[in-house]
Length: 514
Image 1 (spheres, rainbow, N blue to C red):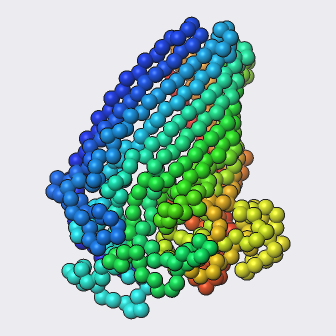
Image 2 (cartoon, rainbow, N blue to C red; image 1 turned 30 degrees about the vertical axis):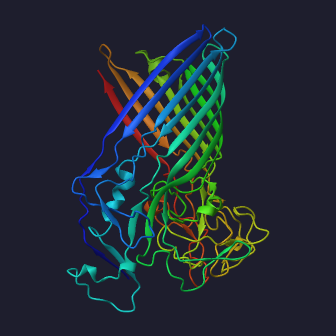
């Protein structure tokens, strides 16, 4: 059982102003070379509260929160200048080969979605947890302060938070093959700097062993013994995205139009972001080890190594008209979208605080050890059998997607050596198709359109990540929990219960145009 108590004065009158200014110009350097130059500046005021009800830590080690009218010690947006450069070059001067490149800096503004968590901080708001008590208490909600301070979950934001920004750059070569056919190849990259991170600051005090490892003896106090978990939002994360992009496009001619696009990419970052939606398939909260930030670096939760999309539209060459032959054979149109994608990564987590560092609970988890000789993404071959799983079972399917024998509990008091987002989830293959028939009706401009649409026409099951038994939970980014506190395997570990796409659906439509 979990008991919570609330002083729910959570209404705030925040005030904040955003102003944006930009200048840009296109410079025709030569008849074949155009340069676009620009700069944008966005100034956003330091958020304030009309009644002075901002409760936040000056330092998360402090015994008390500071009450103030503004959130940040100084405005983090005063230097938010964003240069932009673009270039287009007609390489041979014949209008058939073009080189395009661009560079830009983009700041993410610190808006209410980032700081409104302060609405849930004492003394204006209290939230306490008593997890699995040994008795069933009677709660008097008129005595909400009866909870001990170190049971309080505190939410805070770094008062010296810096504005996150991204540096984006791209390079593409386009070649016109015919009047209606064009191919392109390019590179796109994004470098994220000082991105938001949501962490539990208040871990237990650790020992640093001679070999550099962290160790938590049993019963260690919290860094700030005055409080329980401190949900601390900072801007510490870096990210790196690089992609090769290939495409073929045919404009409409002879009734046919199509586009083909392929992307080979890799995205790496240090953390899952600051919202549940950003933390798909991995723990939302991570421990803060400023000197070990690199140990949390792994594939981004949205990383997709290969992505292929093909869409087309084809109108049969016989036009619709009122004669019998054309009414039967003419006016047909075919449309389709084919999508092929590799899977996104997921993190294997423990269902309890094996490291004894105080990091536990929903969306908060330690990681286990990886056994010697095993892949950190064990989704192919067969399992040798362990933890109640029969040996010889094939991996990669819904009955057993990944091998539980690849992981083991680390020694108590230590962090596991398994990385973040190492296991690649199931891929996706889907075909949507539609067919349309146009009938010419008596009267000027009157037509009847019949349309049949087939979603997932081959009824292929595309699976979501293992371990989730409910689509809503899966789509919110549930964890892959390896074992419980006894070391027994979690009952759903490695098994798939949820699909990521719908089963085949067919719908019909009729439209009369007059």
